[in-house]
Length: 262
Image (cartoon, rainbow, N blue to C red):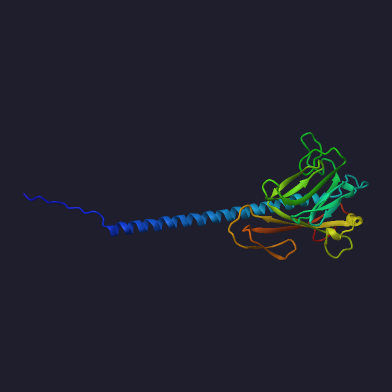
Protein backbone atom coordinates (compact mmCIF):
# COMPACT_ATOMS: atom_id res chain seq x y z
CA UNK A 1 0.00 0.00 0.00
CA UNK A 2 1.49 3.32 -1.05
CA UNK A 3 1.04 6.42 1.08
CA UNK A 4 1.08 9.80 -0.68
CA UNK A 5 2.59 12.63 1.31
CA UNK A 6 1.20 16.08 0.42
CA UNK A 7 3.77 18.80 0.82
CA UNK A 8 2.91 22.51 1.32
CA UNK A 9 5.04 25.59 1.19
CA UNK A 10 4.57 29.13 2.47
CA UNK A 11 4.63 32.40 0.55
CA UNK A 12 8.00 33.69 -0.39
CA UNK A 13 9.22 37.13 0.66
CA UNK A 14 8.88 38.36 -2.92
CA UNK A 15 5.22 37.33 -3.10
CA UNK A 16 4.49 39.06 0.22
CA UNK A 17 6.18 42.22 -0.99
CA UNK A 18 4.16 42.25 -4.22
CA UNK A 19 0.90 41.68 -2.33
CA UNK A 20 1.64 44.52 0.09
CA UNK A 21 2.58 46.84 -2.77
CA UNK A 22 -0.66 46.07 -4.62
CA UNK A 23 -2.64 46.63 -1.44
CA UNK A 24 -0.99 50.01 -0.87
CA UNK A 25 -1.73 51.04 -4.46
CA UNK A 26 -5.41 50.16 -3.99
CA UNK A 27 -5.60 52.06 -0.67
CA UNK A 28 -3.88 55.14 -2.07
CA UNK A 29 -6.12 55.11 -5.17
CA UNK A 30 -9.22 54.78 -2.98
CA UNK A 31 -8.14 57.68 -0.75
CA UNK A 32 -7.35 59.86 -3.77
CA UNK A 33 -10.75 59.11 -5.28
CA UNK A 34 -12.46 59.90 -1.96
CA UNK A 35 -10.59 63.19 -1.58
CA UNK A 36 -11.40 64.20 -5.16
CA UNK A 37 -15.08 63.40 -4.70
CA UNK A 38 -15.15 65.23 -1.37
CA UNK A 39 -13.50 68.29 -2.92
CA UNK A 40 -15.99 68.21 -5.81
CA UNK A 41 -18.87 67.95 -3.33
CA UNK A 42 -17.52 70.88 -1.29
CA UNK A 43 -17.16 73.01 -4.43
CA UNK A 44 -20.71 72.18 -5.52
CA UNK A 45 -22.05 72.94 -2.04
CA UNK A 46 -20.18 76.27 -1.93
CA UNK A 47 -21.48 77.18 -5.39
CA UNK A 48 -25.05 76.43 -4.33
CA UNK A 49 -24.68 78.45 -1.13
CA UNK A 50 -23.16 81.37 -3.05
CA UNK A 51 -26.08 81.40 -5.49
CA UNK A 52 -28.60 81.13 -2.65
CA UNK A 53 -26.98 84.00 -0.73
CA UNK A 54 -26.81 86.21 -3.84
CA UNK A 55 -30.43 85.51 -4.82
CA UNK A 56 -31.77 86.06 -1.31
CA UNK A 57 -29.83 89.31 -0.88
CA UNK A 58 -31.04 90.73 -4.20
CA UNK A 59 -34.62 89.68 -3.45
CA UNK A 60 -34.60 91.33 -0.02
CA UNK A 61 -32.97 94.51 -1.30
CA UNK A 62 -35.09 94.63 -4.45
CA UNK A 63 -38.37 94.23 -2.60
CA UNK A 64 -37.48 97.05 -0.22
CA UNK A 65 -36.30 99.43 -2.96
CA UNK A 66 -39.49 98.82 -4.93
CA UNK A 67 -41.51 99.96 -1.90
CA UNK A 68 -39.57 103.21 -1.35
CA UNK A 69 -41.95 106.12 -1.01
CA UNK A 70 -45.11 104.02 -0.75
CA UNK A 71 -47.62 106.24 1.05
CA UNK A 72 -50.85 104.29 0.93
CA UNK A 73 -52.54 107.29 -0.65
CA UNK A 74 -51.86 109.18 -3.85
CA UNK A 75 -52.32 112.43 -1.94
CA UNK A 76 -49.67 111.60 0.66
CA UNK A 77 -45.89 111.70 0.44
CA UNK A 78 -42.98 110.18 2.31
CA UNK A 79 -40.13 112.51 3.20
CA UNK A 80 -36.62 111.13 2.53
CA UNK A 81 -38.00 107.94 0.98
CA UNK A 82 -34.57 107.13 -0.51
CA UNK A 83 -31.06 108.03 0.59
CA UNK A 84 -27.71 106.35 -0.09
CA UNK A 85 -24.08 106.38 0.96
CA UNK A 86 -21.03 105.47 -1.14
CA UNK A 87 -18.72 103.09 0.75
CA UNK A 88 -20.51 103.82 3.98
CA UNK A 89 -23.66 103.21 5.97
CA UNK A 90 -26.54 105.58 6.67
CA UNK A 91 -26.63 107.11 10.15
CA UNK A 92 -28.51 109.89 11.90
CA UNK A 93 -32.11 111.03 11.83
CA UNK A 94 -34.34 109.48 9.17
CA UNK A 95 -35.18 112.76 7.47
CA UNK A 96 -31.67 114.28 7.85
CA UNK A 97 -29.48 111.22 7.37
CA UNK A 98 -25.72 111.29 6.83
CA UNK A 99 -23.00 108.76 6.01
CA UNK A 100 -20.43 106.88 8.08
CA UNK A 101 -17.58 105.15 6.22
CA UNK A 102 -17.19 101.36 6.28
CA UNK A 103 -13.93 99.40 6.06
CA UNK A 104 -15.79 96.86 3.91
CA UNK A 105 -16.23 99.59 1.25
CA UNK A 106 -19.88 98.58 1.07
CA UNK A 107 -22.49 101.10 0.08
CA UNK A 108 -25.46 101.79 2.27
CA UNK A 109 -29.05 102.69 1.51
CA UNK A 110 -32.01 103.98 3.51
CA UNK A 111 -35.56 103.20 2.40
CA UNK A 112 -38.70 104.70 3.91
CA UNK A 113 -42.34 103.97 3.22
CA UNK A 114 -45.71 104.10 4.89
CA UNK A 115 -46.26 101.56 7.69
CA UNK A 116 -49.24 99.34 7.00
CA UNK A 117 -49.97 95.66 6.45
CA UNK A 118 -49.93 96.13 2.67
CA UNK A 119 -46.33 97.29 2.36
CA UNK A 120 -44.97 95.12 5.20
CA UNK A 121 -45.40 91.62 6.59
CA UNK A 122 -47.73 92.03 9.59
CA UNK A 123 -46.71 90.64 12.97
CA UNK A 124 -48.79 88.02 14.75
CA UNK A 125 -50.74 90.86 16.26
CA UNK A 126 -51.42 92.42 12.85
CA UNK A 127 -48.94 95.27 13.37
CA UNK A 128 -46.70 96.47 10.48
CA UNK A 129 -43.08 95.31 10.73
CA UNK A 130 -39.66 96.41 9.51
CA UNK A 131 -37.01 94.38 7.67
CA UNK A 132 -36.20 92.42 10.87
CA UNK A 133 -39.79 91.53 11.64
CA UNK A 134 -39.91 94.06 14.48
CA UNK A 135 -43.24 95.75 15.11
CA UNK A 136 -43.37 99.38 13.93
CA UNK A 137 -45.40 101.86 15.95
CA UNK A 138 -44.52 104.93 13.84
CA UNK A 139 -46.36 106.07 10.74
CA UNK A 140 -43.39 105.17 8.52
CA UNK A 141 -41.01 102.22 8.22
CA UNK A 142 -37.30 103.02 7.88
CA UNK A 143 -34.96 100.24 6.76
CA UNK A 144 -31.20 100.67 6.28
CA UNK A 145 -28.95 98.13 4.53
CA UNK A 146 -25.18 97.68 4.31
CA UNK A 147 -22.57 94.89 4.36
CA UNK A 148 -19.71 94.34 6.78
CA UNK A 149 -17.76 91.61 8.56
CA UNK A 150 -19.36 90.15 11.66
CA UNK A 151 -17.68 91.24 14.89
CA UNK A 152 -18.07 87.73 16.31
CA UNK A 153 -17.26 85.39 13.41
CA UNK A 154 -15.37 87.68 11.02
CA UNK A 155 -17.54 86.45 8.14
CA UNK A 156 -19.09 89.08 5.82
CA UNK A 157 -22.84 89.58 6.13
CA UNK A 158 -25.62 91.80 4.79
CA UNK A 159 -27.08 93.82 7.65
CA UNK A 160 -30.40 95.54 8.06
CA UNK A 161 -31.14 98.22 10.61
CA UNK A 162 -34.90 98.48 11.04
CA UNK A 163 -37.10 101.11 12.59
CA UNK A 164 -36.19 99.66 15.97
CA UNK A 165 -32.62 100.92 15.34
CA UNK A 166 -31.16 97.49 15.93
CA UNK A 167 -28.87 96.24 13.16
CA UNK A 168 -28.83 92.47 12.57
CA UNK A 169 -27.37 90.25 9.82
CA UNK A 170 -29.92 88.91 7.38
CA UNK A 171 -27.77 87.17 4.71
CA UNK A 172 -24.40 85.51 5.32
CA UNK A 173 -21.52 85.70 2.83
CA UNK A 174 -22.25 89.17 1.40
CA UNK A 175 -18.82 90.78 1.25
CA UNK A 176 -19.85 93.98 -0.50
CA UNK A 177 -23.07 95.75 -1.46
CA UNK A 178 -23.08 98.44 -4.14
CA UNK A 179 -25.95 100.56 -5.41
CA UNK A 180 -26.16 103.04 -8.28
CA UNK A 181 -29.14 105.37 -8.74
CA UNK A 182 -31.05 106.42 -11.85
CA UNK A 183 -32.34 110.00 -11.69
CA UNK A 184 -34.60 111.88 -14.04
CA UNK A 185 -32.54 113.73 -16.64
CA UNK A 186 -29.41 111.67 -15.96
CA UNK A 187 -28.03 109.63 -18.91
CA UNK A 188 -26.50 107.01 -16.60
CA UNK A 189 -26.74 105.66 -13.08
CA UNK A 190 -24.98 107.71 -10.41
CA UNK A 191 -22.99 106.82 -7.35
CA UNK A 192 -24.60 108.01 -4.10
CA UNK A 193 -21.83 110.58 -3.61
CA UNK A 194 -22.85 112.23 -6.89
CA UNK A 195 -26.51 112.70 -5.87
CA UNK A 196 -27.33 116.05 -4.30
CA UNK A 197 -29.60 115.88 -1.25
CA UNK A 198 -32.44 117.70 -3.00
CA UNK A 199 -32.32 115.21 -5.89
CA UNK A 200 -33.05 112.02 -3.99
CA UNK A 201 -36.74 112.53 -4.71
CA UNK A 202 -35.91 112.18 -8.43
CA UNK A 203 -34.59 108.62 -8.11
CA UNK A 204 -36.77 106.24 -10.09
CA UNK A 205 -34.61 103.09 -10.30
CA UNK A 206 -31.48 101.54 -8.84
CA UNK A 207 -28.81 99.07 -9.92
CA UNK A 208 -27.98 96.87 -6.96
CA UNK A 209 -25.01 94.54 -6.81
CA UNK A 210 -23.62 92.14 -4.21
CA UNK A 211 -20.28 90.31 -4.05
CA UNK A 212 -20.71 86.92 -2.36
CA UNK A 213 -17.73 85.13 -0.83
CA UNK A 214 -17.67 81.35 -0.37
CA UNK A 215 -17.86 80.03 3.16
CA UNK A 216 -14.60 78.05 3.27
CA UNK A 217 -11.20 78.44 1.57
CA UNK A 218 -10.64 75.84 -1.12
CA UNK A 219 -6.91 76.33 -1.56
CA UNK A 220 -4.21 78.87 -0.79
CA UNK A 221 -4.19 80.30 -4.25
CA UNK A 222 -5.25 83.42 -6.09
CA UNK A 223 -8.88 83.48 -7.19
CA UNK A 224 -10.24 85.76 -9.90
CA UNK A 225 -13.67 87.35 -10.17
CA UNK A 226 -15.40 90.43 -11.60
CA UNK A 227 -16.41 93.08 -9.07
CA UNK A 228 -19.52 95.26 -9.05
CA UNK A 229 -17.89 97.84 -11.32
CA UNK A 230 -17.29 95.21 -14.01
CA UNK A 231 -13.52 95.31 -13.44
CA UNK A 232 -11.55 92.04 -13.04
CA UNK A 233 -10.39 91.54 -9.44
CA UNK A 234 -8.51 88.90 -7.50
CA UNK A 235 -8.03 87.65 -3.94
CA UNK A 236 -5.22 85.65 -2.34
CA UNK A 237 -7.22 84.00 0.45
CA UNK A 238 -8.44 81.04 -1.64
CA UNK A 239 -12.09 82.09 -1.25
CA UNK A 240 -14.21 81.93 -4.39
CA UNK A 241 -16.29 85.05 -5.05
CA UNK A 242 -19.17 85.76 -7.39
CA UNK A 243 -21.01 88.95 -8.29
CA UNK A 244 -24.79 89.28 -8.67
CA UNK A 245 -26.68 92.36 -9.79
CA UNK A 246 -30.20 93.51 -10.58
CA UNK A 247 -31.94 96.65 -11.80
CA UNK A 248 -34.98 97.62 -9.78
CA UNK A 249 -37.65 100.22 -10.51
CA UNK A 250 -39.15 102.23 -7.65
CA UNK A 251 -42.84 101.51 -8.12
CA UNK A 252 -43.99 104.60 -6.27
CA UNK A 253 -41.92 107.04 -8.31
CA UNK A 254 -43.83 108.99 -10.98
CA UNK A 255 -40.74 108.55 -13.18
CA UNK A 256 -40.57 104.74 -12.94
CA UNK A 257 -40.93 104.06 -16.67
CA UNK A 258 -37.32 102.94 -17.18
CA UNK A 259 -37.38 100.21 -19.77
CA UNK A 260 -34.58 98.17 -18.19
CA UNK A 261 -36.01 98.20 -14.66
CA UNK A 262 -37.80 95.14 -13.27
